[in-house]
View 1 (cartoon, rainbow, N blue to C red):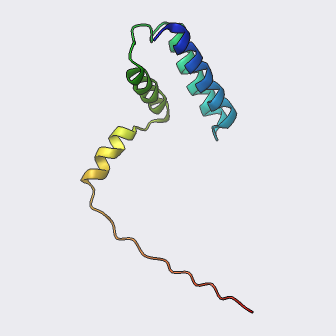
View 2 (cartoon, one colour; view 1 turned 45 degrees about the vertical axis):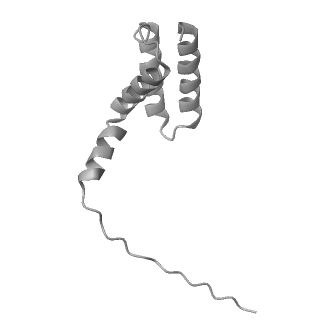
Length: 94
């Protein structure tokens, strides 16, 4: 994995964030963060695709204040809640 691949990935990611993320200010913050890390060569020593993806994901989640890994662990320890079943009927008029 070379620097060019990492730059193309971060550029594509930031474009997607800016074009589609529901909160434009948050998208700008996330884009600025990962672009700054790329420019500061923080990803230079990463040569594994999965590790690169995990690190960038964790950094973006850190900005949002969430972690999918943490949530997954918490879900396993939680008691399942009872769900109410909603039944909808459709009356067809002929």
